Length: 193
Image (tube, rainbow, N blue to C red):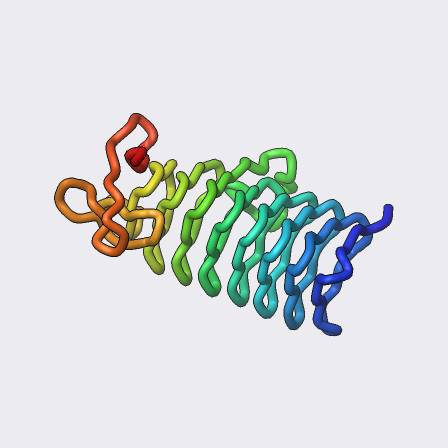
């Protein structure tokens, strides 16, 4: 199985890219990364030092994965996701070193534009909504709504954020852009101008 790596991709000479991976244009793969077979990485992504991806992981365009992050089979990152330094994805709920549980991997979906803070832990089987913000060190054990701001262990929602990452004011108004939001069953969505 051969790989497809665009000419404009930078792969540091200490990184390993297994056969059968696809890496989109202008993506940068830094020191000591390992991309396992079957993984698909979009355009303009940045994979920091010591990142492990795969096997069979899909990552969208414009994703930034900071140092020391492992993205296991079953995790999908949509476009423009930010994974902070040393944050953790799990892949089984009841791991034991002596029990094989690969058939029990639960899928985890991180939707477009979401941010996961440094040292946060995402327990497998959840969906993190579009443009949600997961605080540093949070432990996410259940789904997170679109544009939700969550912190703590277990993570609880303390407010809302805008597309630009600002905490929303009264009236669900972004203090940076003036964009106005409205509540939906999935969280928030911007009002159309």
